[in-house]
Length: 135
Image 1 (cartoon, rainbow, N blue to C red):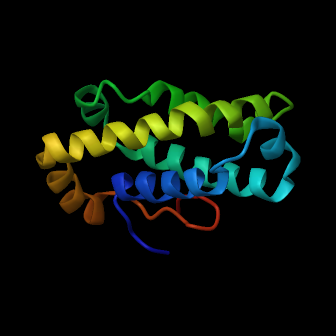
Image 2: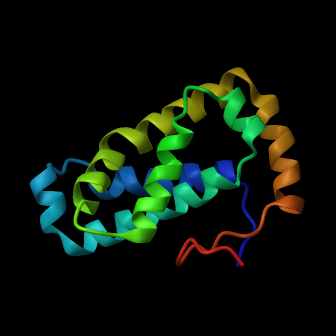
């Protein structure tokens, strides 16, 4: 397993989500079992990484919907029929909005990323690229 900062994990998985779903309409996305499964996996990686960040970071980056990530993580862990609508909402709103705000914060307040990048290797557990599971 690799040790990767939560910010980098969010950005990598978010980029994968956007790439997987680029140009797809909701019906196409829902009809593609493989795309939907991989998108779900990448969203689980994003939510796991978002939950690794401290409450202090969440409070500093108020524009990011951290509670949305927490809810998504819980709902995807429980699964269910409402999952399709939830996945589509995450694909179209939660993931892109989070990536946009992370870019803004990285540009305007790079100290958040430098400090956490150094701490990440020492303090954050690895996130498994295959499952999103933490050791």
